[in-house]
Length: 449
Image (cartoon, rainbow, N blue to C red):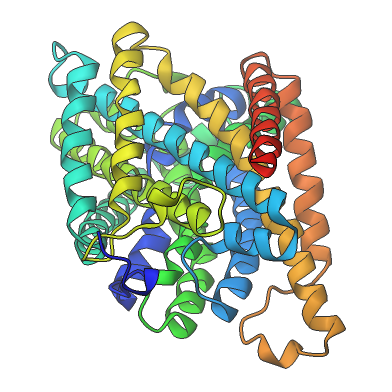
């Protein structure tokens, strides 16, 4: 191992950063996780994604403001440690590492389900094991290899979604009758909100899973070339992408088939195109959703290793995680995260059908801590520059400060309340309380050593 100034290589180019920003927000949450959300809210899922999209854009602007000013690997974990104190950095870092391990688990378990669409006899654990070996190898080479893999995987996802939206609207306007009857599935079968306001509220808690990962662009800032230019451009395009990819796809899906016919046996995309008699499109989309999930797993493994590296640099993790390979890769962090990911091989062997939903709810609970930390840290960050009369040094600002922060606090508090009243989600909230308590105990024990 070489510590060459203990710095990572800036090997991520502008095109890599653009695709990372886009690719991390398009994965299992959209392709598979949308199915349980549709069951909760029906066609109203379109509004669920729109509202959640506004919230996540606010979070992205906060991350962007801090990362453009100081582009370091570790992003908001570094800033939480700097502006909120050592425990905040410790909590943010270890929670984010835990969160992305869960995301790794969720993506891998979803891939196993997708593969079974073609090969129903292949056990889930075998698919999971193969994916772990392939993605770990990609991450161990160098950051440019990771960037290239993510670039092409995201390109495939984006191209497929654009084609699906265009093809979907073609079917809607040519085979489903004249307007407005061709859009009648949006209000038939119980209306736009068939399960009422509570169904809409519940959907927001599930939808948040889809947006976990967009803050990864801040994590990647420390390895980006010319981050002052590439970060703002990537972040500013997030809202437009959300409108196009999430809302556009939901309009197509909810129009092509009645909402209550979308099941959980495969991706809603694959199922709907298969049901309307286009097996070729269904097979192509199944390939795309596998690539999408692999892409997010790739990014998640990347993220866990960089968080461990940042924690070690701040004295919050064993020093071995701070070391880098000659290629500037935190190899030990990658291998340890991979080793823990192997636990999913056991879980998918024991509970192959239930793993995904358990993971989804726990990821959302962990995301609440991450996003709350970002909003609080940003307030401290901005107030410091206001008090020191240095606002002119911030070249990329979150708008409507501090109201944007208050909006995020209220939104996240509402998500927690909603989760508490959802039986499946309540368990994950309880588990998260235990997890935070564990982090606090280890922090205190570490301080005494």
